[in-house]
Amino acid sequence: MMELIAQNMAPIMFASLVFFLLIGYPVAFALAANGLLFFVVGAELAPLSGGSINLSWPLLNALPERFWGVLSNETLLAIPFFTFMGIVLERSGMAEDLLDTIGQLFGPVRGGLAYAVIIVGALLAATTGVVAASVIAMGLISLPIMLRYGYDRRVATGVIAASGTLAQIIPPSLVLIVLADQLGRSVGDMYKGALLPGLVLTGLYMGYVLVMSIFYPRSMPALPKEARTLGAGVISLIVALALAGAVFHFAQQWLQPGHGANAGILAAALAVIVIYLLALLDRTLKTNAMSRLAQQVVIVLIPPLALIFLVLGTIFLGVATPTEGGAMGAMGALVLAGIKGRLSRDVVKQALATTTRLSAFVMFILLGARVFSLTFYGVNGHLWVEHLLTSLPGGQTGFLIVVSIMVFLLAFFLDFFELAFIIVPLLAPAAEKLGIDLIWFGIILGVNMQTSFMHPPFGFALFYLRSVAAKVPYLDKVTGQKMAPVKTSEIYWGAVPFVVIQVAMIAIVINFPGIVMHYKGPGIDPSAIEMTLPAMPGLGGLGAPVGGLSGGGPNFGTPPAAN
Image (cartoon, rainbow, N blue to C red; front, side):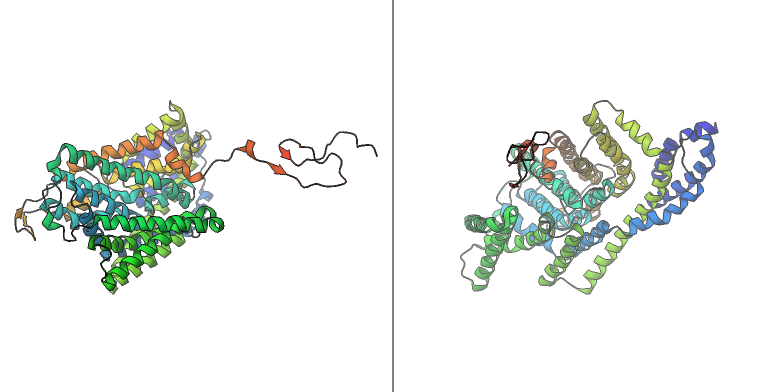
């Protein structure tokens, strides 16, 4: 009996961890306690294991070094920086300004408020990277407005919850930082790989709203004329965008010789600065060259776009590491909050408290995971998992499908941090052995983990929205009408179509890896490489091509030329 337990220690240990988690034991302590308990058992049963357990008491001396490896990990410093940035921006009122302005822009269109929520969700994702902040802000601001103007409650709640979860996959997402760390890959590469899938997912959300507005127009009416306080002026905005496009074109031509591949990004930054200054001058001098709508859109949209460039642009250009980009983003958030007059001691205090709590939460889980992995690797658990997964039928595709289903199901009970720290280290070796690019694998997992925020009944985004949606009847501030409360069932049913879209996105990333693999840049054809050697007088045979080299090389093995 003891021999059987000793030879199957890895599956018993994993099942024990799952049991501890399901009964609600805190994750960090479940990992550490499980690791220490099975270390004691494994060290005693090692002689009976037939070589499958490699644990001994001196191995515990490795724990301090493993802990120090976590505490000295500079990559993880990006987590508190981006969290602080997101909380400060949430308190600065940026979400409110964005929703009001973009809602006015899309107001005349059926489903305009839903489009506005999705676009603002993407912008908040690219500036905050925090799901809770995005969902709560949009739930407080947009949900009452959407219900006021007759939106279907399931559509309204679903759009808000789904748009908030874009912060999971659009850089600078916290989960991408953790995944990059656990997979041993660059955070910058993970961000580059995730950018296009995040935009595609945003487009799929907007496509769903378009389909609903066509087939069920009463579920999302256009904003009534009296609610469009900024009036018309779309043509003025189009002219301003065309001017920005012209500035971009000429700036790119001018910068191309000196800056190469970075010319496009620098030219875009210059075009944005020019159009922003023109809008500020127009408003200050009251020349009315732009419509009020165009002025508001440019002035409200440019600061968050500038912050996105400050964070992501510097990372993609190679000017800053993700940690440095996060530090600049935190500073930029303080500056934006100060410009808006929303920076106060209380705001900074709340942001620091929230950042400290989240950072401590992540750090404790990581330390617990180090204890667990020390024992799990000692009982050859990684080899058990690797053998289990690499023997699946279907090769890479079969592996990715099974892993996606497993993560989707586990996401009903575990949040993305727990999945990243417990499951990903077990899956990564098997994926690498099958020849799967780990950045591609990380993006698949990231999109999959996004569903953990959405699927009923445990989705955190649904809980966040439930916390701010009306639970009792209330009087609308504008119309004075009595509004019915939002039911929990309406929030759950509203989330279902977006969970289906997220699952479809997983299938798209698996079947079209090119939307991620572009992070590697253009491929190099070895047959097209030419090397030219300089002429070297005095060495016979130089000048004739040798192998793939042009310009010649020594003709070894032949007699020297006669004098």
